[in-house]
Image (cartoon, rainbow over all chains, first blue to last red; front, side):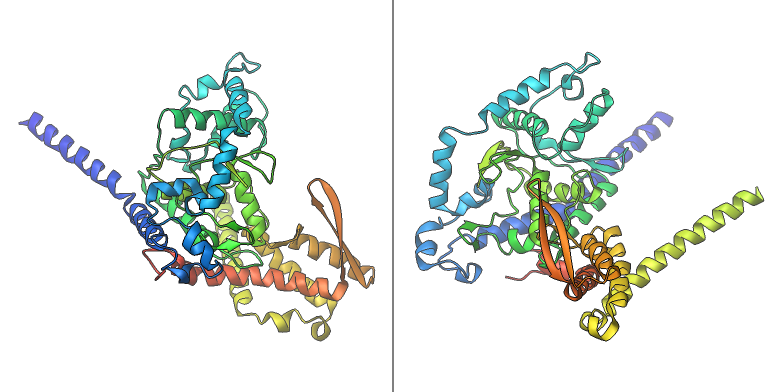
Length: 303
Length: 144
């Protein structure tokens, strides 16, 4: 009798835990689905949906925007809806300028620290780019890949690396490439109330207007996605984090997602947030969840 | 034990006071008429700069400080205050761009107006965003 009670109690507890774990991402999943629906509707036929693209010419709307763009296509960023830009992108991809960085990243991965250990102890697997950021319930904080790499260095008595470029970007390029080769997808989890709260704070910041230009991230990358700023098209939130680190022609070097985010902060007219700040990590957590299920395709090239 | 209670009580009161001061500053900023409060001719240079310093410190704390063309608002406040003390008509703002030090010149009155308006606008936006951010979310307030 007692054994039966224990068994039933355990079953109820496990069921309750499973149901709860599933429910923490309910709102995030609704948000993601709504974003996919919006993006697919907006880019179904740019020529017919002209109200979304007030600065584009007839020629662009008829000949440059492909029709019926689907969720997975947005992993290409603005090249998903810019046929002419995409052909230039394809040309550059024939001899990508980041290949040396992947090799350098692999070397850094295996290189011994002063204590004889290496990154292999912190990251036994290398196809991990799609699992970051994640929410660490023990630390009660979001952990980005950038932060995890620097935490590993510090734990082994080494100095932290620059969070925007250089060695850190190269190691990330190696992890991203390995993830891409293994066919990994973004797998961002929200499985506690604290994680759901962090996601909500990140979401609020993404949609809040800031800086002296009073722009939110969404102004450019949700409502503004596909609109032209001078000769460039603004990229969509959907698929925005799948291809980092990127080799930007403007930088003439490889940079992390945090480096790009700092550029966005400046463009908004705000003093940029530090890559290790809670603000930045929670914003990236939200952004990554919006691309959940999309293939990891970094490192990549952007203008 | 009594001493511990006293310390805890003082600390608690301190936290509450700080919290309410922060809320007060945000409310004050939200209600402020920037054109009037930051008018250098009407209020005088010193008063406008004091207003800028007070509100900008709050904006920095909240992580919403403005930055224009490489110059943070803290830089505007600091450099303009120094120029005002030295009775200079012109402010020379220094900032870094791609590792090089650059300079920007502005009339002192105008720099004070900018420092003040940037400080208050940052807080006003924070307050406005509380009720407007959802209007941009697909599946929530954004209609298309």
